[in-house]
Length: 398
Ligand code: PMP
Image (cartoon, rainbow, N blue to C red; front, side, top):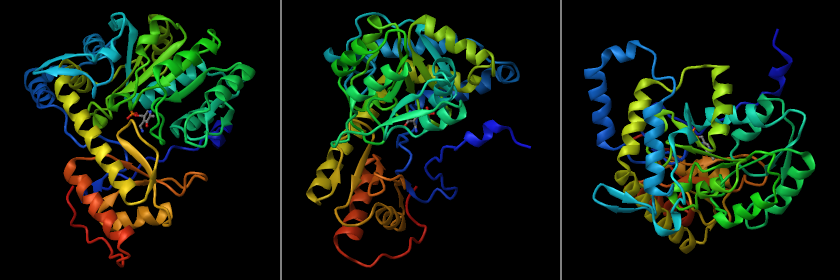
């Protein structure tokens, strides 16, 4: 009954989303802060003043949203935690300056960056050519490869968890395929500098797409947006789900040349020609017009990440130094699965992957100070004191 294509499907398994909401949720790299109050007001206003707009199809070109995204990137340089804020005024830090103006025709938006990524795979990765992927990368890339019937060629990580850029390039060259990786990488949290990516782009074939997924860049990475002036094959994917406190809004976008944006639009219009819904457009537009709040949120996350990493070091845990809103860490003697289970018993969810090579680790999303204090207390209790684990009673804070 099912098509032969179905055999290649190995669906992505997201972090647990418990219905009871009684856990502290540090397992899906969401932002612990709500969107700006301006977003909340804009949504209520929109519904009250324009109920008919919900009965009509949304702007197919998301023009206002794309203008707002471009404006935010120009004002922040694409790294929120570094941007300089004075009240509501925001400007990029010196090191993040974009040497040109990002224009709305360089933006494509979709239903989360997952959807955007799927269109990128369709448009640029051929099923006849093996796609080179880092061994540990965003686990949706191999899922999409299966979906589009593309074989993969997996390059091991270096010992320090960084990407083996030479090997990635060399194999992409041999396979005649494009390249995709997350920067900072997930789930390691390590970031390549812009100069390192530039060096890769110089060696890569200008005829092959070069995709950099900057889902976590706002927490301390170096954005490759400035490189768009030099490299026409560069495509950058970003999301509202992490630094813009909007995972529930499902908004992701591409920054690339207008030509690349047109290719992706062609894919979209061949599948589901409607854009993201009207409410998400309003929410995204308002968020981008008010970046100062999100800069503060990103800085708070970075502060907690640094404090948590110091805590882990003190307690003798191993961790990969992160430039994101999560930390990949392992206890020296307790298995990753056991750490996950014990922390869950304390009412806190973190992410454990059973994939070989990473099974000893847990990936911990950075939350608010209160959430991280609770996590530190849980870690002290379960992994350092040797106290017996009690089953979780279900009364922890949300
Ligand atoms: N890229 C990376 C590297 C991610 O970790 C994620 C989130 N899990 C995504 C893309 C997808 O994010 P979203 O679809 O919520 O925009």
